[in-house]
Image 1 (spheres, one colour):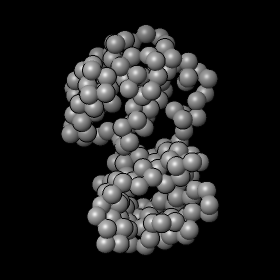
Image 2: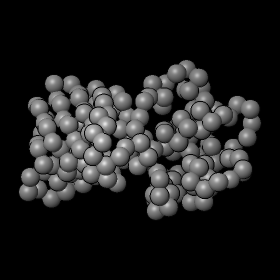
Image 3: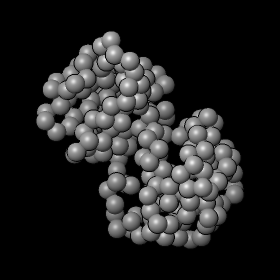
Image 4: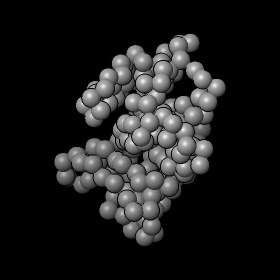
Length: 191
């Protein structure tokens, strides 16, 4: 790995890729899906094992090569890794925002408070995995008892909910804070 590539830049690149994908990458099946999506979107292959090494899922001393970094940067919406670095060096809020990876940062019974424009407030309890149930809602289409899946919360960015079960409707996707993003606060479970 060259001197220009450090742990913080790799972490920011991983976060950018997860933003594009719409959720965190933490299991072999998610690495496989990411590999397939990169192949489909770019026509370039990055193996599942390479992705697992880059994300630290498996221990490795192998350093990422330039073509892998370029492909991931392109997938994340940049021209190449050099333009990604330029964006990082200029302090892009999107890449360096505070985030919560549900799979590694939350425990079951933790709550997350979500706020976005229009005085929308939702309090959801983490059920485990990436599952949540709405326990309080103000000025939102989400209602108490709704359940959803979410792997990644990014401060100030739109929030993408998967498998939203709202009342008696079939599961669907839903976006909170599409225009101005969502702010969140974690409320740890009382022991």
